[in-house]
Length: 164
Image (cartoon, rainbow, N blue to C red; front, top):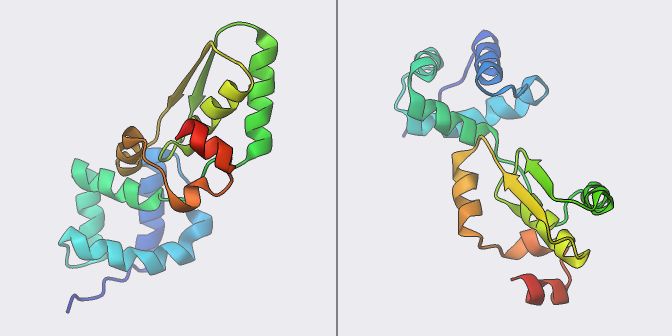
């Protein structure tokens, strides 16, 4: 059985500071849930204690990416924040010229795809949408472009048939 690695308050604050320096993400308000989830993540890092993990995190590029992937996992689905997406589409349509959109963070692509879907429904033809994310695993998922289940919950059956 793996030894449970529990960070001290000081170590957890240092971890939050490192993540903020690496990514700009402030996890201070998620400290309690982070402390609970960290133990499971740490099992795969081959470290004896949290202090050793912090040392490795500062110098190991792969561990940095794995850690960022761990802390940036969030929920996403098509047409999430629909009012905001519609505002972007209405504004883009009013410009009557080519529009470039950067979606950051884009997670596994649902927001980017939602914008493209809404653009098609609104007859916007000259739009370029680029999605980026700090989480490498969700980018790989986005590249596959395969979606199912909960992520499609807000799409109508006709939208699913037309766009998938």
